[in-house]
Image (tube, rainbow, N blue to C red; front, top):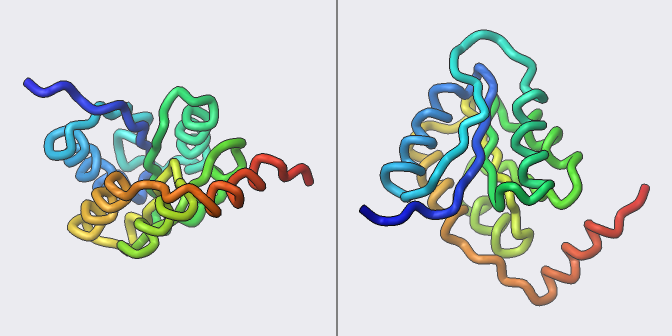
Length: 151
């Protein structure tokens, strides 16, 4: 059996449970990643920040290099995640955004809207995001500015 790739942490709210399960299965079975699923595990209504915080804190604290968050639109989860130091969460509901979030922004959390995109597109976005490298160079200079923001 092949060794699994480094872990990805994933979380969602009740609006994106079905898509999270599809993405998680893909990550494990087709892409070969270890996945830590912080929930939700049923469709009971929850406060999405609770799950966004779990994923973003784990990436911020370097326990995971990458994370995936899903909610109804992706908007709330991206807002929560980007409150954390060293997190660059990108809301990507198309392939171009997924590629550019990695090439130019070195996004370490992918956010998608479970009520916005279908499962086939979501898997293509995940694959694009996972397989697109950060270009560095002038883009790194810009990212360095992120860490120096002190409002």
